[in-house]
Amino acid sequence: MPFPSSKPFRKKANWLAALAVEALAPALRAYARLQTGRSCLPSLWRKALIIGDNHIGDLLYRSASLGALKVGLPDCEFHYLAAPGSSQIIEGHPALASILPWLRSDSPLDLAPEHLATLKAMRFDAALCTNCIKYWPELLLALRLGIPNRAGYVYKGFSGWVTHPMPIRFPQSYPAYFRDYVAGLTGQPGKWSLRPVIHSTADDEAAAGELWERLGLGRHKRLIACFMTTRQPTGVWPPKNFGKALQMLRPSAGIVLCGAADDRALLERIAAGVPVFFFRNLRSDPVETGAYLDSETDFCPGSGWLEPERHAGILAGITPESVASVLKDTKSKDERDIKDLIG
Image (cartoon, rainbow, N blue to C red; front, side):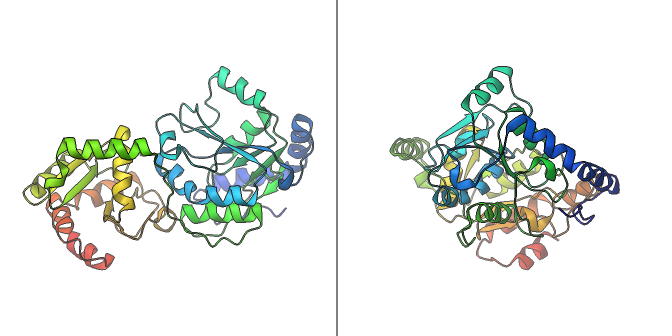
């Protein structure tokens, strides 16, 4: 296994740490085998645990490739470890045998003792460690659970804990990374759509219709659905600016404010092709963040990996007036036109 390249690392200290860990790969591999036993081919897996980032967006972009995962490994039963606040977004996905909404934070190591014991008792054949940035906690959890097959990335080290190394090609959007992951694991050509997959039931449709009628949404010629909150700690446009921009739009459109409990309604609007505008976290890479649909537009400039101080300056320059003017003129799909409008 080649030593990690310095290119994916933003800090030299992290790269040096990865080199040190990779130098211990033989010892880590021996330790893992003692803890879990020998690995086997994916075609022999019968029960696998999927572990990954648990924000709503993280689950959405993985949803696009879960069907291909099941097609590639039809005899395997897949269980998804998620967080209670976001797991509803993938409920009903036919590729999943169950969703385990037990994560209490962003770390897969933050499990209640009773949930850890339940996972051990489930005796998984494989763990799919799908985080492509900070993946070592997922590998450590798989070892604690005694899982003998561990599919994951190795480009930042810890290859001694991975039995099935997954490919990664930079730079791509996060959904494309997971598509390559599934393609590499199952041997399929990664050609399927990256559009998120939401499975609604007849009860879901009835509830949405009832809500539509109860709120009288049909009387509006235009409706704007808006999320005003985020779980990201930095790079957030102030809520008062959202409020001011929406007030400017009220005479010409109906406004629907959406929160975590009502995510389904917004996603149904997205599935219908309604244009979506968002503020990307500027600490992320613009290519990797990408967009879930071709009807989405990022209000932020194309640069990334910015420090919080730069976030504040850029967001301060995006005024409610400029946002409202862009939303009023949704016919323009050219990102350059939108960047001109917001200055």
